[in-house]
Amino acid sequence: MNQHEFHLLDKLEVPVIDRAYLAHDDLAALKEVERFRKTYTIEVWQGDRRVVRVKKGNAALVSEDRPAL
Picture 1 (cartoon, rainbow, N blue to C red):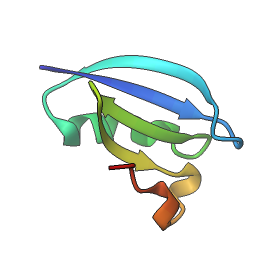
Picture 2: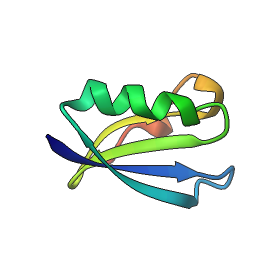
Picture 3: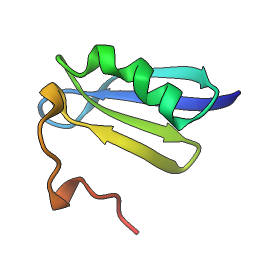
């Protein structure tokens, strides 16, 4: 099991809810956040690695959504 952090963001991109979640892998964590995507933009992190960003309503990602290198 791997520790993942879910950060649910408001329309100003400010985290309003943070949750810890144990998942077998990144895909299991992504499946868990699907229930929040209608209301929030979500970032899933594992330690200091951003696993995925899912925009509210599953809107298309743009270049600004890319993690900083």
